[in-house]
Image (cartoon, rainbow, N blue to C red; front, top):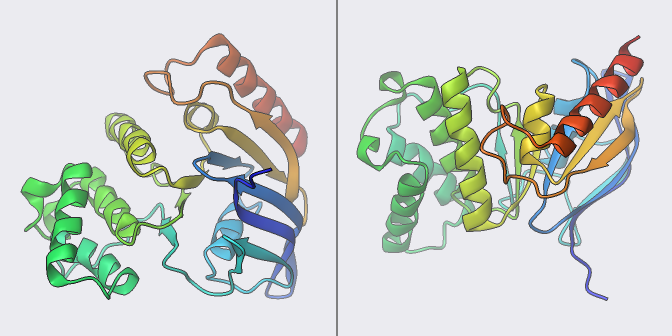
Length: 254
């Protein structure tokens, strides 16, 4: 039997400043799969992503990507934050190239240039490649962050509320970008979001993180994801799942 798991989380526990944030997290992410994580504010969703990215130490358990333990940042893991994390002294092209240099520094200069140009076309910023962050809109800045995270062609992409600070139209445009990235590159994606409709529209599976310390307390499988026009227009089945998730959230908050 072929094992399609790319990321394994085994009995993961995390403490910050002596306080238990996550406990007994167990989950496996398959290749070419989109996972959405939902839960109330402050429950530990971002902490989980940072642990998966190797940015914070874990107290027990383990995380493996393609069978290798994750204890520090890896070129095989891309991360996009809610904030527009770009370098203001670099133009769009050089911001993306930075991710490529640290991820695939053995490539020739010609291969790097070709890779960056393809990414610029994919994120629709080729005509703006010489501009600096101060000259860009919020949506364009987030596209730069996506481009840099994808530069090293990671196996998995972690998205921490990447649309939270954006207006509706820009948010919808970036949803389309996510679908394009998934279809073209086939990376597995884990996305944290407070928008339940968004989670159901984009993901194959939705996980609820709840409790103190937090653990995965509920899971939903989404049939035929990413076929809807946007999270504003879900199928009746998806609407039912949204209602179930909202009810679970209300039960955990009350």
